[in-house]
Length: 418
Ligand SMILES: *Cc1c(COP(=O)(O)O)cnc(C)c1O
Picture: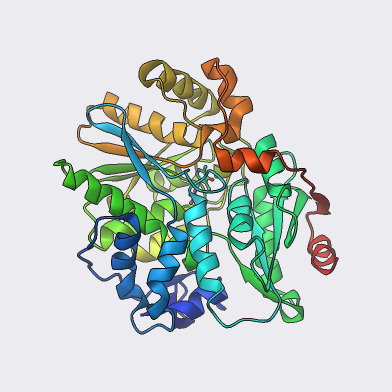
């Protein structure tokens, strides 16, 4: 299928769009239409192939879609019902313990099958979890190196350690600035002559190669619910750059049996304000406990508006303060014996408010990261140790190194040249 830019000037095949990342007109690529798909199969991998196949129709990668999905969806997306009508969709069973492993691995599997320069630099800005997921997906992949930019002091200690622990073809830079600065630098790099000097590819959530596979676990979880005799579930999606939530909305638009989609942000409340007022106003990001969602200018807004002109009819949104995040982590542990991460807590808190309004029906909250990534926040609240899953524990046991970088294009130029 052809892909078109949200700004209309640029188009290409799906693999062109994946390889290019950002469209040349500055917009974001989307498939030219979202076909209705009757998803087949029982497993996450089979369902991913079935859902994505119409989008890859006619593409050079079509014959390899099964292998790509087998590589990307190599760990489960698990539904855990905490009560009769409320559950978590656990998306953190991958190598870096956050949902971004799915998208990053899919991107790695597709990019390594596409023609490219002999030495390609994957440039990625991260608010905490993307960088590690992309690093893990491209670690020791021949022909690739990864350059990670993260805001110094604004990611959790374990996230920072993880980012610096890969080594080999992965380099981490701690930028003197915010995530929005890191994201701006990456965008600048792509529109500057840096791009002419070396083969640069993006791995941010603007890349279709990360966005599209994220549809699969929503389709999978909703079909699992139906198979268990339930009605179509609703999803609450903890949201920052809006990639995960747009994927959920796209899965629904392609026919996955999904009822409502609700966005949960932290105190970076640009999206709830947009939905309430109809006016989109980007803001400087503020630091919160749910740091991977500290985004003041969510880039996927452009996709949301292009896909769903009646945004307020497609989705609702609410925001959660740090105090409410803490309260929710405590309450969820007391009520269900379940330890959740601060991002997941935004979702659980928003659902708690919906229930208080009398909203009924089956809801799944996307559990976007393992709580052990945020041990210094979570452990004091629940009063017990939260051991890391095995893969995270292995990374944490390795030495870590990150280099300082100024939040300027000169700083980035130097970093890329060094
Ligand atoms: C990235 C991230 C989010 C936000 O996802 P978006 O796709 O940027 O909206 C939420 N939770 C965690 C743990 C994340 O790493």
